[in-house]
Image (cartoon, rainbow, N blue to C red):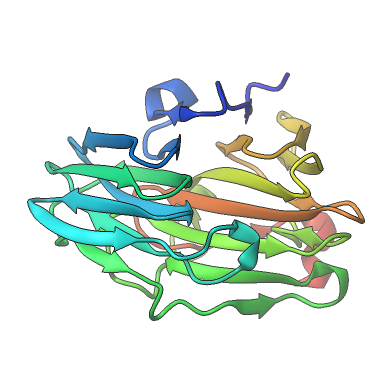
Length: 264
């Protein structure tokens, strides 16, 4: 199995824990909890800021010394409604108690204390179409460059219809040469409908030094340290993914792959 493809290490509790040291990079961390009603999860943020994304279900949150009440509304991610999220700065703590079966994503990157804890969504997040033809997909921007919610993190959700491509035309963001291109590490947390479906993701560089084609299943995570990274959903299988990006600056600038430049 590719070192870039991470399968969940269980079906319940904490099923993913990806740190920069584990991934072999410097910025992005990602964890995932699947909880049953009454179960809890919590962490100290340390040097990281985090965005907690209620992928599915409901949970009550206490974070950064405040009670945030119950977050979450959609019970199935493929409802495609805007997510409820919570931003927690570095040097703080958070704790969640599940009020239903729930899936909580923990998106992490270095924090600099520049922002206070806050709710993100569902207000202000709207499902937006992008692309055309079989490149059409639908996006919930949680904290991209236009949203000044955090120090390092860029976070978004993408829904790819069955038979369509996504993160396409192929592009890369693996050099620190702003404004032409920015260096951003990235994780993809994948979901499939139906849950026993599959999709594919390719991660490749122009020179071929990295070229991996991976079959992704429900709850898999793919690491993108560099290179282009398109995804394809076969006919009959819808694909969702949660993207987490971070690098030395909080800007998303990319360069297309040479073979698809005419499609941009």
